[in-house]
Length: 87
Picture 1 (spheres, helix red, strand yellow):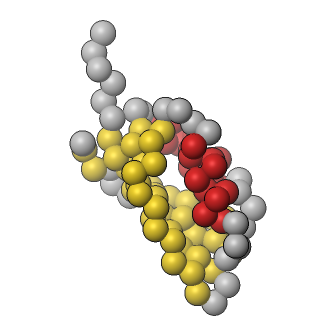
Picture 2 (cartoon, helix red, strand yellow):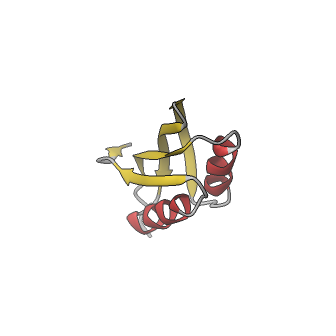
């Protein structure tokens, strides 16, 4: 069998500012053993936050599932993917 191709993907996430938002985001990512968190940066101002999340995933299906789960976090308004960066 061939090794699974893994790539780093950059996600942007936007939503309403919440004291526990970083914890909620990292919990969603940590629950999936097939996804590795590589980086997380969140800035907030005037009641809103925007963040960049870098994750290592094995395939686009897992990435799509992660995006769906992140969108379900209360307070999250938008999650979208940038072009992937090959490892």
